Length: 541
Image 1 (cartoon, one colour):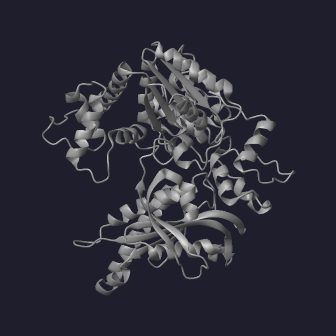
Image 2 (cartoon, one colour; image 1 turned 90 degrees about the vertical axis):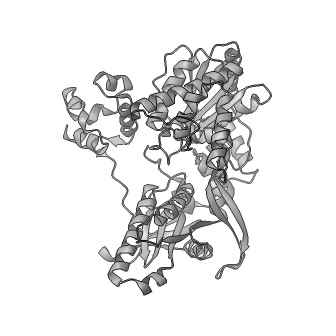
Image 3 (cartoon, rainbow, N blue to C red; image 1 turned 30 degrees about the vertical axis):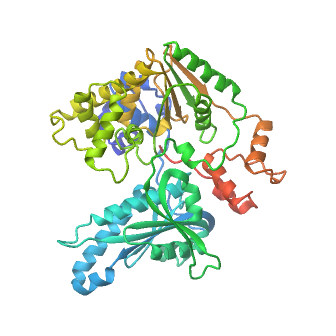
């Protein structure tokens, strides 16, 4: 039982160790636990969700340790970040060496925190420069995205480092993606360095030198991999020392207001194959909800199997049918951000712009909520608080306990959905719920219950590790997507690769959409050197 107690403590849920012990729950039965089992022994809803997610990463030997950097050099497709402190020479001329050391140390700790928070590996500190790898020692499906998010977070965090009155640290960040050799290439034992060889680290360093202070600059390969997830300023093609051809570069301005991660990351449009029955079911449910019988459709399946593509096809099929569409997507980088999917969707729907004043944002929010015929005097202060929009003197300030504020906010969000459904049918798509935050899950529980009596179709997509508690309800249907038959897989390969030839002996199945995206950018796999890159592991959830 000690293993279970230690595991719960790492999850921040040590208070349940005694209950697990009293019910003889040991590692051998952990994977068999259900939401009902946990509820029966007194685990709260939010904590049940955390435990069920964590169980997917638990084996009988205990929690999987963080991967240690490998010792052998290997070929990898990595995204590399190079960050450099601006004005460090000027600092050194006016500060005592000990004071400068403290500032550089704080800067390094700040960089490491932001990089490691997003799954990066700090490979080397070079004075006031930092080199980080994304995709080593473990590769994830969204390494390029993580690198860009880390770069933006690093710029903001470094600016907040305390360096005394009248001073502020600034940083430049360059990010590049490409094929490298990485591993312990230099030294032995404690002197080993996880070095990287190839043109990509040089390119990242050159891009950093091109960047203005407090900005992030990326190359074309990174830009293709992150798609429409961010807003960019094209800097054109730049001649870079050591590179024979000019390099196209972009400045990352910030996260974009995309309706769907699937749409933002999709490289090209391919027809949906082998899902006619599933599409027909969704269309039947739509006709049903127009008669006033609300419905929920759960779509589950492995990464890249076609969950979002199926939901997107339903959206396309209904484009000519008058309705209101609401799309919310969860993010692997915001699992601890309360109501992130809803906040993002409301900001998009209200039409918030970066240069809006507080008054303009409040006006837009009022107009958005008025469309749902909700009580603005109650809803606006709550939703404005959620979106960090000051209400000034237009509404009385909120004086609620945190719990009451949460309850009233969820109720206001539910009332908005009810108001919209009263006007016309609503299609609501909630994507990637395996990454949902606990507060959003509380809201989704309320929506699933309420949808039954609304003119609304709620489509929820998730991976198999997510355990929905809504099955068995009369208005809930689940679609479990399996792999396509061989003939349809072959047809898909031919369409994605634009009919380029594939070696007859090549039978690997790329089951993640990110891998397909990478394969299309790089062309057909040329040999076994990239086999290791294809053998990526799923990130713990």
